Image 1 (spheres, rainbow, N blue to C red):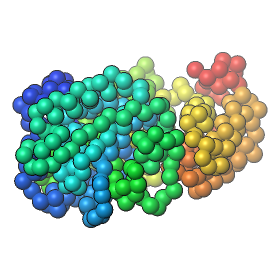
Image 2: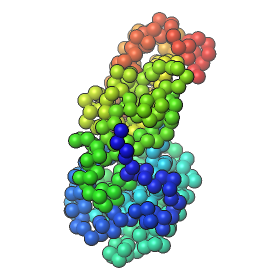
Image 3: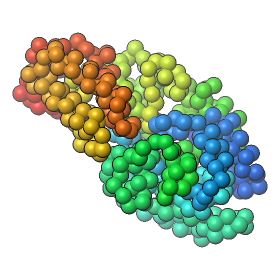
Image 4: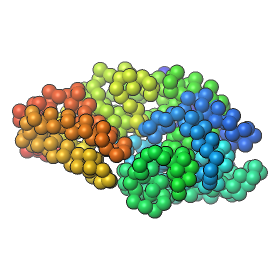
Length: 430
């Protein structure tokens, strides 16, 4: 398997907030090169790189930046989504904790392109220690002339502020995030207008994920074609994958696109421990799809996964072995969304509660076959009518578990659970 070290090359090798060590390890070469280029040429390299947004939406970064660059009004803001509230996702945490200057450099290159003077990194409140590391890195970058006033003698003034989130999952949605930065309740806005036109303080805003920004310095330094060549025809570069659950070697792995899920779980992750067998994989966090072993040879590639009805999402891979109950797992996932719904729209606010109630009936031996049909109908209603991505994707686990494990749901309707993990057996969910 091809080795890939773009984002994680300096992990553990440098002091995270040390500009001196970062520069000695190849840092800021992308920015130094960028300030000698035309903004249009930098954008062209990003387009060549085939870099898609790494936060979950997978929008082509080069096209997004090209569209934002074409907007003439200002000021323009650079915003980084470091909320990372998706369960099973902890990749951005490693960048922020071990090499935050690559994120800062990527945002600074973006600021040079857009002529932006202000940037914001929105970090989840639970990452308090990491916030201190990032703030220290920002201050050190200012002292070294890579941030602040007249960066590298170019006349560019650009500063970055760290904003602490307050634990709201919905603030991972880009418009809810900018609402939160403005001091308002974190709830999504109506779109359009899109944030590239009318974002933070109703001004043009470039908002990307930590991992996306962190790819930019390498792309500018080495060229878009070099980055693209590490991946597939449809997905350029590498991806940080978060491997957790019933797998021997949990952790974050940087893999080139084209690596299969089987290679990630069994070659890198060491497979399923304790002699158990794989039951299903939950891909992309709680808002992603669940699927059985038959799809494990699918390549990690946005296009290939889409053809299989899957989405890479944030890059979370949660492995579930055969000791677990699919119905109980679905209930636990939906309890998370019931808690995190912002309440703005009826399909999400009420739908999540009703799904939990139906799943509770099934896991306690009180459900019926009609409840299963209600699960299907309500899930599709939420998917098509919810106001934002949270409500639209919340029932994905239920939809896909029903697709692949409907017989297990029917067994619960008949008062049976082979795994013994449900309240049906008087043990409670474990």
